[in-house]
Length: 258
Image 1: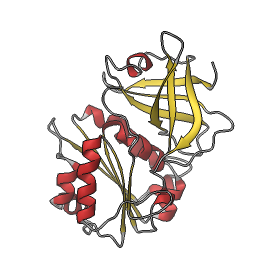
Image 2: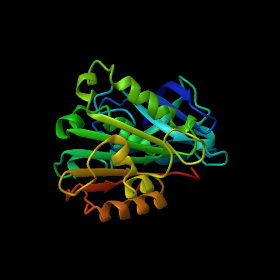
Image 3: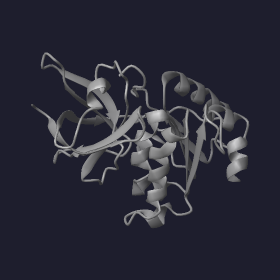
Image 4: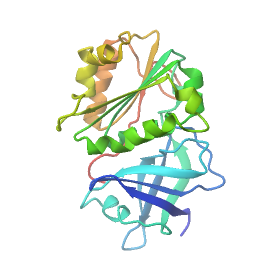
């Protein structure tokens, strides 16, 4: 199988969410926040591929991915059953807009994600450059239930003890998880918590402004559109690799139906 990589670890977080690690092609160079096409062969031996953000940072020796399980999804209905030692297809051509280079320099960067949209930020939160370029990093992650937040919570918790970037992270990273369906000490949609100013109040920080704040967005199409409107209301403009501005959105994110 061309572009085959071996699965080295699989962890099921909930009955709907799992993460896995695979070997990294020696030639693969990527920027934290980018995605690649990964998949499996279908019944006819044809590659069944989808875009997946790389959840591990650019310096990691392996590649990590974080995925939803869709019972009748063409790919994830199969992918969720992978085990250590199995092979997946990985096309080593990384792309994507959620890279630090696509943002203008600023003081604070906001990572805004729902569900498995946290994957590119799992990469960027472990990337030293993030802390070199920004004084503050704010991770807002919203899921329906508390257990769906666990992947992100554990990652943030482990970061402070990380031998490589633990010291850089300390005091700089603010984590703001919320739920929309299950009771939790912080609730509500990202758009509502930004618009109402609740998140600024809760974290004891100044409201968002275009001069100092930068943002990255990853979630469903509807979420992206709603968040873009809120960011624009604060004066931020959408940028791209070729034209850095105040915020960027990952349009290749695949949510339901995979």
